[in-house]
Amino acid sequence: MTNRSNLWAFSLTDRARQSSPSTAGGMTKRKQALSGLLEKVKAGDDDWTGIVRTSETHTDLVWNAYNGDMNAALMLHNAVLPGCSQYSIQTDPTCIKATVCWWPDGLSVGREAHGVGWSEDNPARALLIAILKALIAGEDA
Image (tube, one colour):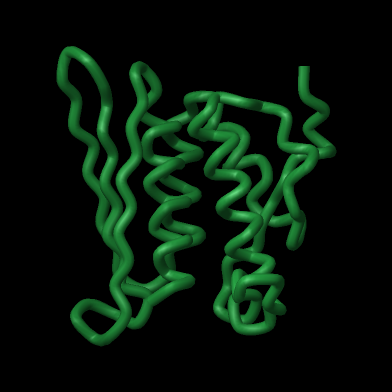
């Protein structure tokens, strides 16, 4: 069982985004942390101790969404995707697909980021993956 005090967490305010120093290859520390977490979530790996930590915000929401709490996934969506965003969740007999579209500067104003997540049986985890992908895409926008 994973020690929750060791969980990776993140702060996703514009201030954190702007102050995030670059690392090798031009990837910000924040983007590196998001990418590391995304790989762990997609793989179903709940040992997140080796992932870069940028703050201690939203840990419970991320952990609970990872473990299937849809309310936590929706709260995370609202907390970390400020501005204008939308999501959809689609199901079929083989999987669950979540899609997120985020306009951090407002609808049709500037940047736009998308994320798509898949899960066999966990809609909250599919939405978490889509949120992480949208945040990573927002780093590039």
